Image (tube, rainbow, N blue to C red; front, side, top):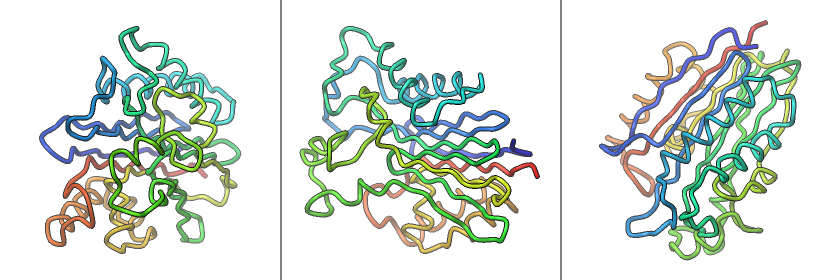
Length: 252
């Protein structure tokens, strides 16, 4: 069980925030909706926020009823439910249909974690070390960055490419998963890529990120990201992204 769960989320622009956090006594889920590029037709009657809300609700319902299934199976079932909620007007075979990254943890005798897409789970070990778990397949597409829209479309939810939660339930089977002894874990941080850039772009150690998160709160972590974005600029892409940080301190 978690002794305490705290989080903060902040939009990256005037657009609605497409991140989502849902949590219960022993679990945390963080979703990051993938914003379509301008002019791209996703073939769906729904927007990304709809998908994120539906998928988050489906995951929360399963985890809240103490579903003991492996997290990848929980996610696959939730994607199936979300897929079924689409209207007949939605082209679910369109590779640009709404999608999201998923990061979740569940605590029992062990700490279970799952990451699908470019979000990050970080375990704060009792000894002070931080162990980051991420899915870096989006960073390893052929040819290197900058990626063309056609390359991303072709490699999304495809063998040798990268996987996200959208209209294909089998994507869940490609999640990065694992477990750790709960007795060796002090707490767990869960981050969208809008916060993970603090380490990946700006060189903060994950130990430093978790220290700020635990001592000063999730808002302070996001504030640190925004300050660096303003003073040093982005490494690539948007100057500001939707940013979410969640922290669960384990009960010992």
